[in-house]
Length: 219
Image 1 (cartoon, helix red, strand yellow):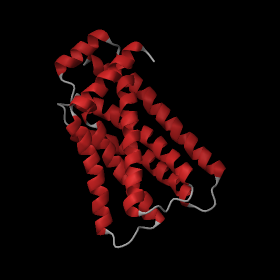
Image 2 (cartoon, rainbow, N blue to C red):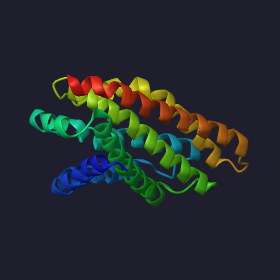
Image 3 (cartoon, rainbow, N blue to C red):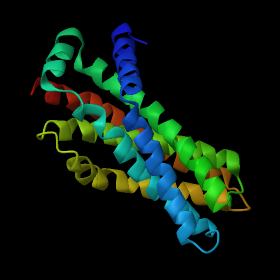
């Protein structure tokens, strides 16, 4: 890993430890939302509803976790980063940090879903792989949306507005992939095709971020 990317990544980690209220706030949001679902349902949901609820929660968790990615960076700090790193290094560090943060949040969400809403998943290893792959894809999209929203008078609401049309096809694809993990007969070929398509979409978003961010950086 590039030394500058590592230094920027270390900076984000240190800021997270210093501002722990935001991190714990997201964890509280996850736990409270899933617990309210548990209280509102008279019995454990079937596999289809369970799957839909899980990915909806993932979407909102990512918006809350990643929204502060660029909005917390003030103009003076951005000018300093401009002088010491390239736009590619800066956005790469942000993406790596948000990916690991979202992966952690995804595992926490999955554990709480298992605890409160049951475990209808049959092919558990495959489903965990889908969750991790989905966490990476969603965090990539909203990291880029956070960078765009930060330039629009730091309006966090823009992240959800801009990100929804972009993330919707990927979210539908993840839901379709997830259904395979709930089926008794696991179709390996179809799953690999969908997984490959998801990885391709993630790669395209990453490339798009590397291409577009330098223009935001110079603004």
